[in-house]
Length: 56
Image 1 (cartoon, one colour):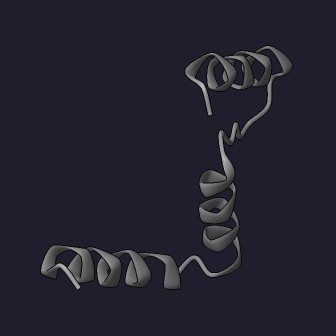
Image 2 (tube, rainbow, N blue to C red; image 1 turned 45 degrees about the vertical axis):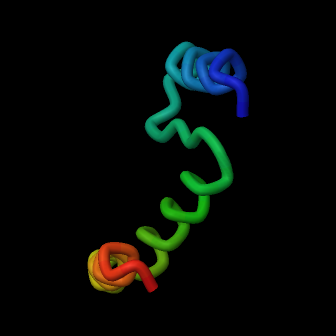
């Protein structure tokens, strides 16, 4: 996504008074995961960090 498009999404969200402004599909996926499984999210993030740190 071009930075200009992301900026427009943020500005529009702020002007509309939205409590959450999600830019990009990755933000939507993370938001959904946190809402559906708030206790599971930190576990998944820690596993992903370990996996990426080990290079596998």
